[in-house]
Length: 210
Image (cartoon, rainbow, N blue to C red; front, top):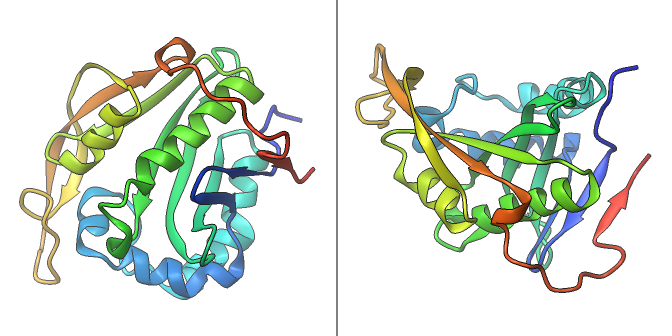
């Protein structure tokens, strides 16, 4: 059996990060139809409810079981509304290193949810799972993603030239867009020593499901 992450829920001040469920499919499909999500990610288009349900039912569990990473649905504590996704991928168990990506619903942007969710996952990785490196890769034109990396204390390590494909000019996706363009990626890293000393956390902050 390959090393893999346990099925986990992570609680932050305002958010609960939990396994994706089939009931999330309508909200997930709506979130992924946003132009900025389509422009900056490599997610399929159209991102249908059927695909979202299959992602929760099949692909996300297989991704975790194979040791490649883990996918979290990000929800508000107060409303249980889906505000985003956080995914760990390209996990190297020998190096104790993994890469994180994140998507935020259009209505939830500007509230600080993305850095709160990413920081919650980073603290879980370092404190609970013994990881030593977290990587973030942001398209050169995606300033919002870069701000998230900066807010959590990420260190820019350089540029991966022509390492990504964006849909639309300058990351603006439209239904009329008929091609793709290449983009540089900025590589960020976060190590345990980059984090501020955390305040004491409740014992049930991380809930293991298996």
